[in-house]
Structure formats: structure tokens, C-alpha cells
Image 1 (cartoon, one colour):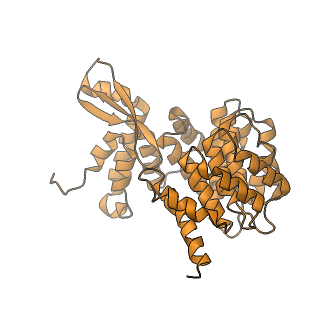
Image 2: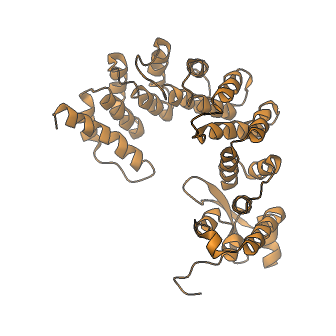
Length: 352
């Protein structure tokens, strides 16, 4: 194989990297690979998945040594485990690869089987992300009903999976009818009162934050003082995603003021960003955000600059200047967007 030739699809499947397979399965896939070859790759991925990456790796190497297992980032959003044994290295993303190939071939895998693949690895694994997105894009009553039914399962992992599928189904519904808006709100407003797992509760509140209905804010508000920081983060982020004049209610404003002083930096950051959604030039919220310009966490400082700029508050300009340009790293784009808001305010102020 030449240096410029793409990796054979067979080797990509064996590698266990969903991101690598995705690179090969682009929009021109049907012209490059025939259906028989794709079916063969589907079977190959299924073999790896059913055998287990570690067992198959042992079979191929014949080694009895200990497997070196490392969690690695496979794409921008998800990780997989990388296993090394006997000079051979593979990743354990075969469930995600199998799911992608089935989708490409037009094969409808049952809901329960897809859920089994996701739960095998956990939420931060590529298999979970691939499965939940696929199910959400189905946007049919059968899938919705199956996901909704999971809210009564005793295992919180099942409930978390169901909540995420419901949230993504609504998120990806771009039809004019918004067919899942009503059912989603009905399910989600009743769910938090009986949810005992913080991770599941946070996911449900995140889903509620996308609803333009006062009932959603009321449920979110009820959890502003929750003991779990992850839940409070979703509270801080969930208010006002649809805010229009006259803006936040008094209860939401009071909650944001408290959340801006939360011990968790990401809660403070979220509260500042949310407060910035209200363009009402609220002096109380503005003063609270200004108090965060000297926060110990740079992310909170940047969020405060953004919020003040949205409130047309002069203090954002000097604060943005002190922070300097966006710092390289995973937050660089968010920093650039937030600091640009201060520059845009300055241009408006100066009549440019």
C-alpha cells in the first residue's frame, strides 16, 4: 500500500477506532465499497464486539501477559479503551463501528440490542454516543416509547440512557410540527420528583432547559439548591434558554444570584452565561457578574465578561483587556466567542 493510499477498511475495522472507520465511510462510501464488502465488515465488527476486544486480542497474539489498557480520546467528544498485548494494539470501539455499519446498510437494529451495546461501556464511550444519536434520529413513536419506558427501570444507567435518547430526539427534531415537544415536556416535568440518581436528574434537567415553557423553569428552579454540583450546573445552564422580554422571573433572578457564588466553578460560569441571555440591563445581575471578574477561575471571569457585554455594561471592556487573548486549549473557542462579545459592545458604544 502506498503512502498516500487510504487504510483498507478491513484494517480500520480491526483497529477498533470508530473515528478511523468514520473517516473512510464518507459520503462516497457506496461508490467505493459494495454492499457485500460492507456486510463482511459488519460481520467482522460484530465478531470483535461479541468476542470482546481483550479476548480476541489474546486469541490473535497467543500471549498470556497482562493487557495494558488505557483510555484514549477517539474523536472530539468520546473516548475508547486502547488495549496493548504481545506487540499488538487495538481499541475497543467495535460496538460503535458495528452500529455505524448497520445504519449505513439500512439495517434496523432493535432498541434493546442497541442499548445493550451502549451500557456495556458507559456514557463517555463512543458506543454510547453512537447509539443514542442513531436512536434519536429515528424520531418515531416506537423508539420514543421504548426510551420513555426506561424511566421506571431500577438501574440508573437505564434511566440515564432513556433520558438522553428523549433529549436528543427533541433536539434533532427539525420538523415544523415539533412533534415531540408536548410529549417531552409532559414526561420530563413529572420525572425529577421521583429521580434519586444525580446524573440522571442532571440529564432530565438539561432536557427541560430546551423547552420554552414556564413549567420547565419551575421544575429546574426547584433543584437550584441540590447537593450535587452536576445537578446545579444544569440548573444554572437551563434557565433562560428561551428568554425574551420581560426576561427572567424574580425567582429565577434570585436563583442566579446565588448560583453565581456557588462553590463549583462551572456552576458560577453557567450562571454568568445564563444571566447574559437577559438583555434587560438588569443592574443587580450586572453587579453580580462584575463581582465575578476577579474570580479564581478564568472560565468564570470570561463568562462574566460575556454577560456584562450582553447587558451593555462598560465594565466588560477593561475586564476583557486584562484577560488578554484566548488561551490555547479546549476552551479557546468559547473564550474567543465570549471576549468578542465585549469587543462588539465597544464598537456599538463608539458608534463604529
